[in-house]
Amino acid sequence: MTDWGKLYREAVEREGDIRDLAFLGQPEAISGLEVRPLTSRHVLWLQLARSPFLTNGQVEFELVPATIEQFLRIVITDSIHAPADDKRIDKLLADKVRSNGLVELVMGIKEYLDEAFIDAPTGKPGRLYYSRVAPIASFLCETTGQNIEQALSTPLKVAFQLMKVHRQKNIPKCILFNPSDNITSRWLASETN
Image (cartoon, rainbow, N blue to C red):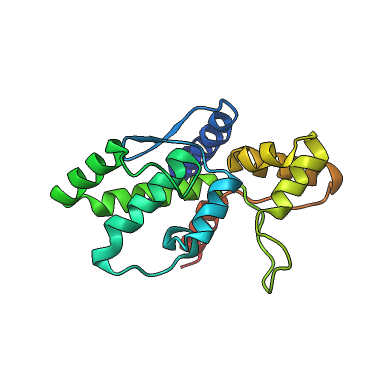
C-alpha cells in the first residue's frame, strides 16, 4: 500500500532543499561531474545548439554521447565554444559508454533540468515576439537593478523563486503550485477508484 503521507513529506522536503540550496551559489553535479547552476545564458546556448534535452527532441541512439557532451560543455563553461580538451567530460563519457551508463547520465541531465525549472512560470502557447529568456532578464533588471550580464548569469532556480515572490506580493489571490501537489492529486485519485 502506498504511504501517501510519507511520499508527500519527502517531496516537500526535497523541494525545500532544492530552493534553499539555490541561494548558496554552490556548484551542482550531473553523475558526479561538477556543473554550474543552470542560467538564462545556458538556456540560450542550449536553444541555439538545438539541444534535445531542452526541446524534448528525439535523438538517434548513436548520437546520444555527442548530445550529452554538448550539453555538459555548455553547463560547465557557460558557452557552446567550450574547450574541446576538457578531460573530465571525455572521461565521464568514456566511463558511461563502457559501463552502459548513458541512461544514468541522461537521467542525471533530466533531473538537473527538472530542478532548475521547479518554480518556472507556465508559458503561454503561441508565437513569441522576444527571446524566451527576455521575461526573466527583464524582471531581474527591473526589480533587482541587475544589468543584463548579471541577469543572464543568475541561476534560474533563484530567478524563478524571486518571480514567484514578486507575483504573490503583487497579486495576493494568485494561486501557486508545487510539484509535490501532484502527490496529493494522485492520492485523491486513488481514493476515488
